[in-house]
Image 1 (cartoon, rainbow, N blue to C red):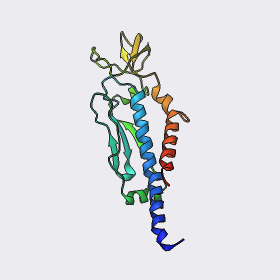
Image 2: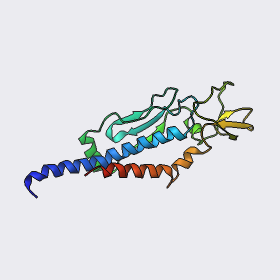
Image 3: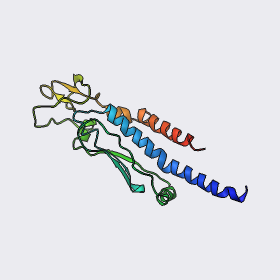
Length: 184
């Protein structure tokens, strides 16, 4: 290999390293959050706009507006420094965490029983309602917890999406393949 090719090779290695440790995971988590915003419940929009993606190793955070209304994309604003990429590569692990800061996030994701708010009047949801029987789960309670409820997402929507080998895993894998295929 001629000597003048070494800088190009180093540049290519750095590009691949950044794609594997940062770009692919960042794009995959952004895509997962976008899907969560679409398939999850949306009454006021606060829950959909309260997602957070934390890439602590890079010192980066992408978070929602925490405002009511239709979902806004949650994206990283910039790229990490080459030093942080090198540190992550040396550690051998790149971690991106997705969370939701809404005070009722566990109820919205059907991870804990629904506790209706003290207010008897509910605003109409921003998303089409699904009518069905929902005992002790989130949704608009028409009569009481034992009566019919309406919701804007199917019961256990989060668990169904996130289960091993499910739709979330496929979205992550396809995003990684897409990012890595662009490196030539």
